[in-house]
Image (tube, rainbow, N blue to C red):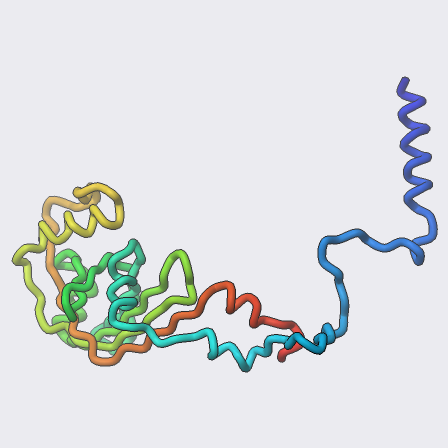
Length: 200
């Protein structure tokens, strides 16, 4: 039995070897090294047209980025002026961005010395929906911080409790007023179609 299987294997290898020049690899996509020609009624999408699928974020879209479970990357300035970035939970209430942290955290200390911040949000389901914000912290308060943390835990963890809190960590809410907002929204399918290796 083993001899028959070995013979069958050798015959199959010999048949597959053949003349490599006459053989073509079967794929679902044709692999070429020249740009495809457009038919009379077609156009090839150029990278320069990418802006046609990009739109600035509306106020509703900006609020949407903070309503869903997207991490916010907050940048503060250390005492020596060097940047410090941390991923945080956040929400947007009216026109203010609220971030919850513990009182002795580095970001809270930095903000006590310098109120300027920068933050970035990228939608987890579509990384081409994004916003970058520059602003200032207008208030640091402990009032309502515990309830605010539970609300954020409900949004980000699905439960209204934060189990990683240490007993001696007093909570603070950082209230941020945006001063400059730079947002962009690109449909992921459009971005993919706009890419071409020949548009360089």
